[in-house]
Structures are given as C-alpha cells and as structure tokens.
Length: 133
Image 1: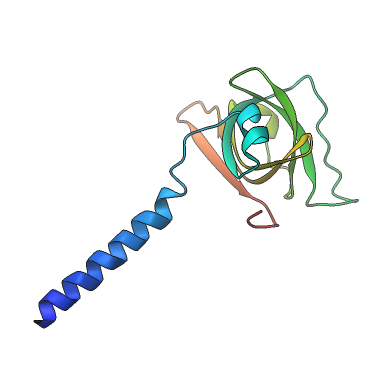
Image 2: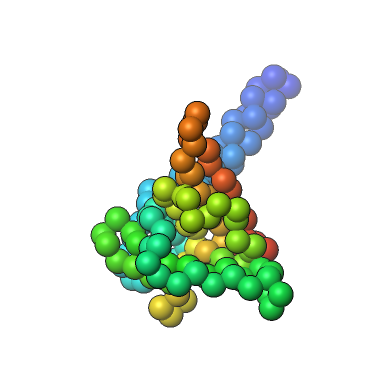
C-alpha cells in the first residue's frame, strides 16, 4: 500500500470522527414536555416569561441565576443557570437553552440570547460554570 493511500485513509477516518462528534450538537429544538419525557440533554428555544420572578443575588452566590422561560408550546418552567446574570437579559427576544430537566426545574448548562439591536441582531452566548451536565 502506498503512503498516499494510507494518508487518505487516515484523513477520511479523522473526518468521520469529526462529523460524528459535531452531529451531537446539530440537534433540533425540543420543548419542556419532550425534555421531561426524555430525561436527556436537549436544546429548548423560548421566550423569557417577564411576568415571573428572576432571582440573582451575587452577594450570596454569583453563579446562580434563575428565571422562567416559555417554550413554543406555551409551557413555562423555571430555569436555573449556574453562571452570572447576563447584561441586558430582560431585553432578549429569544433564549436558546441547552440542558436537562431535574424535577420541575430545567438545569441549563449553556444559554444563547438573541437581543434586539438598532443596526443588527446580536447573539450573546453564556456558558455555565458547571460545564456539561
């Protein structure tokens, strides 16, 4: 077997490995009902429930922020993010959460906010201090 064939086989194997790894993050959005049923890590797109309580007290715990999100089905659940509260959080138009349900709360490991802007849409990415769940 020639060296070029061996290099090509190795490159193909690496490409397959990268695609397999990346495919885990290319999931579709779920809702809270599906998250409860599956018990696995999911992505949920929703809107901030501005009429519900948001809790963030950096003097007590700077890495605890809780709030409520309404998913596409209209179901509202409490979300706990183990990170600081993002600036201008209340102005977000849409929130994409990655995490899993634990009891009645959604434990978010990552959060992506889409915020309104006069000139362009801005996205703010927040990663939890815990890392992956």
